[in-house]
Image (cartoon, rainbow, N blue to C red; front, side, top):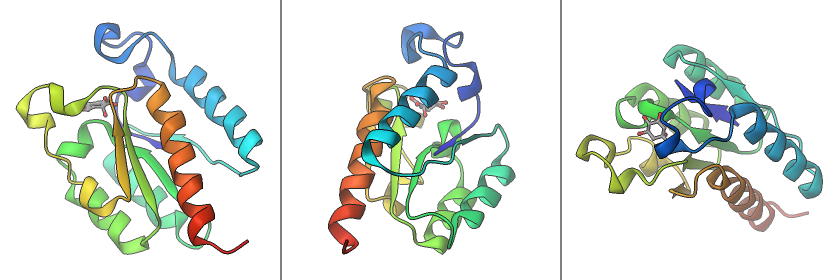
Length: 144
Ligand code: DQA
């Protein structure tokens, strides 16, 4: 699970857009869901594009899938998109807000074309839907 820039401020940051749930609370929900799904989840938040690129590269050979909220880098980062394309790991993109109901500059995602799919607009629940979608996809495509 990679959280991009400014997501460390969740709970305080524009609560009318992103809700009042903190990043710690979201991470706890994800950890709990991971136990139920019997998967191992590594979580990182960074405000730095290069740190996120490094983490995506390091996932190669170590992880089976990638869940990512790239934050504002969704709309700007060819580097994050290229890193995901390079490691070729099933990726689900999530957003708390519905980026298509917001400003025009948020309507384009550099990540969507290299993701299996995107979940956008369900607040903190977007992460849980995203995790389930990714695990379901992996369980269908990887023989037990
Ligand atoms: C976001 C949407 C982005 O447009 C914004 O820059 C964010 C958060 C979301 O989760 O709704 O930082 O990714």
